[in-house]
Structures are given as structure tokens and as C-alpha cells.
Image (cartoon, rainbow, N blue to C red; front, side, top):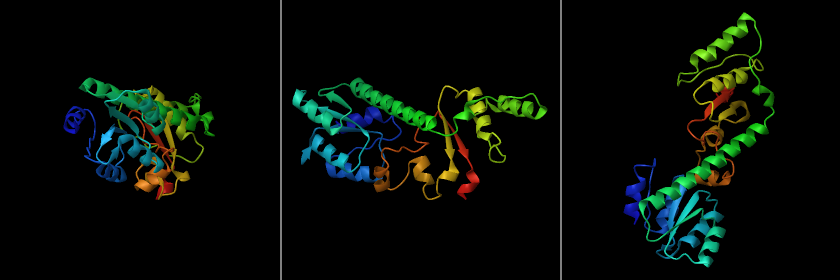
Length: 237
């Protein structure tokens, strides 16, 4: 069954790992972050639900799909309390697994968008949602620049003193680009210490730290279509 799952998920997922027992699975979780874990309830030495409960106590927070041959009410309640996201009953077809994985990814994307929107609404910079107003030659030149570079898939550097409207221009550029329907993610580097920058923005750290911040996803741990605006990069030197 592990070979079957690897075969159907490998071409569709960035990385797929398999474990033959709970010891191997625990070791993988200690070194690698997984978005989704597919778990068989019948495992050597213990049940999948018991292993999942132990991992939840340690801070494991990825979505879990449980494979089981028994669809009784008691197992369903126990699985939900243990934190199972979705069920697949044996015997199953490849499309059932793929649909369950797709549902998990949809849930994760909604959670990430919700997290970013809450962060944005709680920000003190809500006034930056305005437009570039003015008719002076300087403002007209600034307004034309985003129009020229909006179609390009390239990084852009905004320079200027604090408070001159760099984020406002970045939001204007985002609104003109082909990513306008996706998220705008402002990251204030001055508020993040250099040692915490990888963990806060890329969600990369040792497993103990990763589990400790399970409820605080990194700013770049978001859909790839989002646009990130890095403020005060020089403060991270």
C-alpha cells in the first residue's frame, strides 16, 4: 500500500516520504515538515490513532488522513478527537486519496489566507490601503513606474526615507500586477531579530522550535502566488 500511495502522489506532490513503522515516522517528523500525513490505523506495535495522539501532545499540527477498514461510529469519534482531518476507507481507489489530499490543501490555504488577513487587519498601517494621489511631475513619475513594471515577474527595490510611502507604492504595484487577486504580505524586518528571521519568515527551524510556534506560520509559508513586501531590509544586517 505504501508503494501504491507513493506512486500516485509522487508526480503530484513536491516531496513524498514513506515509513514502515511508527519509529521511522516519528524520526521523519523530527527532521522534515510535512503538510499532510496519510496514516494507516493498523500499524506494527500500535494503532495509527494512538501514535497520532502522542504526536499531537508533542506539537504535531499537520493535517492527517486516516486509512481504515472499519467505518464504525466509535472509531470516527475517536479519530476526530485525535485530530484526524479526513477518512479513506479500505479498499480505496487512487481518486479517493487524491480527493482527500486536495481537500486538505484547500483547508490549509484557507487557514493561511485567514491568518494573513487577520494580521493585516490588526496592523497599524491600514491607512496604506489608499491610492497614489497628486498631479505633480514627481507623483506622476512614481505612478508611471508601477505601470511599467507590473507585468514583469521580477523583484523590485523601493528606496526612500521612512514614512515616504514605499508600502503604498508596493500595494499599488501589487494591485496592477497579475497577482492582484492574491495576497499582499508586508514583512517588517526591523521588528524581527536576525536570528529569528528564518523562523519567522520562512518557517525553518529545529523541530522543537517549529512545534513551539505551530500556531504562528511563517509569513512566506503561504501560497506561492502571494506577493511579499520586505520593509527595512538593511536593519537585518
